[in-house]
Image 1 (cartoon, helix red, strand yellow):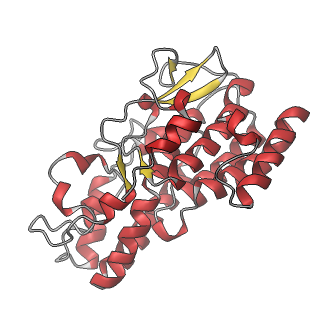
Image 2: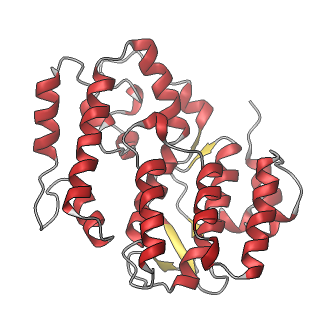
Length: 287
């Protein structure tokens, strides 16, 4: 199989280095101008990163920096990166019991941190009742945040209500029960979808972190929250959208907050990706 790295050399060298310029998102307070359009552009970059067959695997706020010199987000730390095809070819027969990444379950791929899949699905002996109990024990809901997983605190910081958080946990339960009854063949199809969308989760967790920014107006926040929970962090893996779809959705929803020149760039780039062009076109300038 030919490596896709040649695509990097031609089109994306600035995005794929261990950047030494940039602010960590966990410590930087961005303005709306610094966040919105640069994040839309970063989503476009993730689309191209994905379609050449690559996974970052460790995408999170700590591995995405804001570069104030170029007003852009950059992705760093490719130590765990791999190709989708190589991961898809992993042997699914394993004593570890993990249907998704059996050979790596107790090693590197513990970083594959969808909220529930690698925790709840590997043990196929659980009844639905025990599965629900396990999820309830894992998500300890109180104002101090989750003991084992900081999702509650992140959602609280992004102005999600307690009711919205509870609804999200209920969706996790519904999806986990549905997966608990899938056949091996159905789970294999699910695994392929899971792998193809994995970086969407790290992207979504980072976006959730950014939605805490005081500079984001309420109307933009509500639009972003809706896209985030329905299309990116949706517990139902089948409903997670591709980066191309996410790019178009976010850009369209927030187009009224873009400048005229930014809207032109977004519309031109949308036309290019919707025509499935990979090489050529002005989009190269926006990565």
